[in-house]
Amino acid sequence: MRTTTDRPIGSHTPTSGGLAKAALPYLDAAESEVAQVYVSNSRGWALPPGDPAQDTAFREGCEQRGVPVYIHASLLVNLGSPTAATVEKSAATLAHALRRGAAIGAAGVVFHAGSAVDAGYAETAMTQVREALLPLLDSAAASGGPKLLVEPTAGGGRSLASRVEHLGPYLDSVERHPWLGVCFDTCHAWAAGHDLARPNGMNETLDLLVETIGPDRLWLVHANDSRDACGSIRDRHETIGKGTIGEPAFAELMTHPATVGVPVVAETPTEGHVGHAHDIATLKRHRP
Image (cartoon, rainbow, N blue to C red):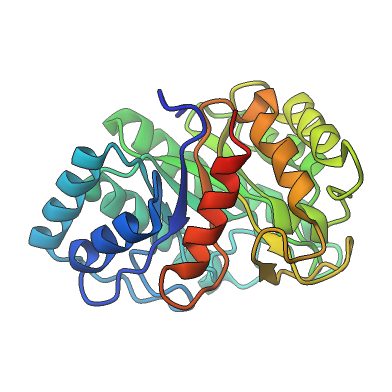
């Protein structure tokens, strides 16, 4: 999953109006070296088939630019839910994203770790994670398709993984399957209580991450500043350097050994490409 480019930097990329038609000009305008896209509604269960012509144009356009592609699955995905229908729809959504990922040449599909929702349901929730993920991982591995990347959440709601040390049991639940990696989100880690803003705080958190998951399991980084305080369990992104984490933490991120060869995606909500271009330029400035 690591790339030949040292820490390529890009953005979550809009696709409204056509995958290639919308995303490729955006990538160029923001000077993105990585693309992350949705292939279904971020807050819905509908699973659109995609447009083969747009898929081909997008895949070829990204290949020509040397841009690796990642899919972010619907934010509704929760394999730990006590509601059976939610678990079923979540697994179907990940299967759909993996199929679409194969069609557009994606390296991986990011999904949120999920939550048990109810007190006392955590053990059952992790069993559900295992039962839902293993068939997906086995199938994707057998076909050589995109990998799955679990993203710890900001915490709250009986989260199954928010702090980085929670990733150990999560990976263990699927026997550390080689097709499951990790997406580290700076805003989520901050919200979950990792003090990234303290001098050396980002370095220490990344050291703990590597200790927990192993040296080659970090496959993507979401680089987002935060509007809220450390430990707030609130997931509200801010432009890098304008939030409560602050730019020095991202300088540590971009020089830590764990991020060598790992793509970095800015997700901050923006108007047009301006905000993403700003964050991309900021991160590139700190890249060795």
